[in-house]
Amino acid sequence: MQRMSLPQGTLFDSDTPLALGSHAFVLPGLALPYVPELLPALDAIQRVAPFRHMVTPGGFEMSVQLTNCGALGWVTDRHGYRYTAHDPATGQPWPPMPPSFLHLAREAAARAGFDDFTQDACLINCYEPGSRMSLHQDRNEQDLFAPVVSVSLGLPAIFQFGGLTRSGRPARVPLVHGDVVVWGGPDRLRYHGVLPIEDGLHPLLGARRINFTLRRAA
Ligand code: SIN
Ligand code: FE2
Image 1: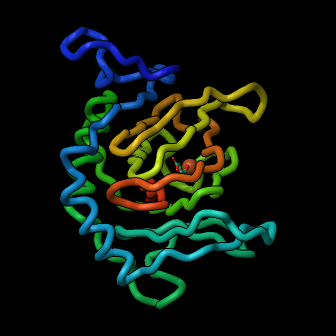
Image 2: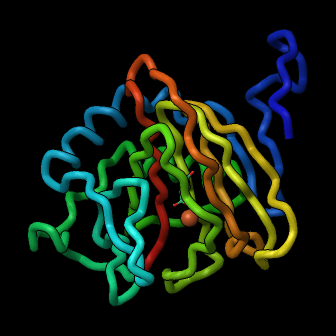
Image 3: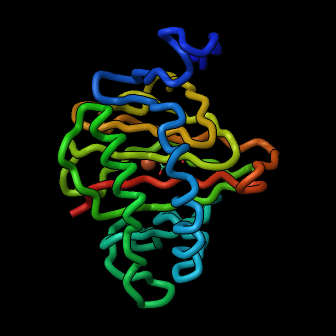
């Protein structure tokens, strides 16, 4: 699972996809060329649909703050988890999906062997040092084979990637700014989470990690 650092130009340099399953891959640095488009797009989204803490059905406030873009956005409250077309905070539709998000998702999905998926939902999570995401499955979407494309920016994280049940020790996958993870098909319901983010300052994003996941929800 460790990122290898070998001289540039060797076959197994740090850009080599890392297989987490037959249909699950880390694509190191794949998002880097898109960052100049992604960051202004994220700023524009959060001006319309600000990051906010949401409450789980069990009544716990999530440690990450979230927002969405695209036709559908993932929300949680005391009534449960679901997708909505409108931001419950403003009553307005979620901001549209930026083209750069779709282009990156298409490239990432294709590299992981998933062609011709279009995503209608994008959940954007903002982590501060100490924020975490406990192990869970993404299962609020209609098609539970279509890939999830997960893009990491800012502070590094340890992503946990487990099996189809909660039992067993999940793999610990270090993710840094620009890394993309894709999982779908038989790996679509793998449990995953994020360990508490460590203190740090990222040159572009400061004391934050932003992760956004694109999915086909409807
Ligand atoms: C998620 O599972 O929604 C977030 C994953 C991550 O932050 O890397
Ligand atoms: Fe998830």
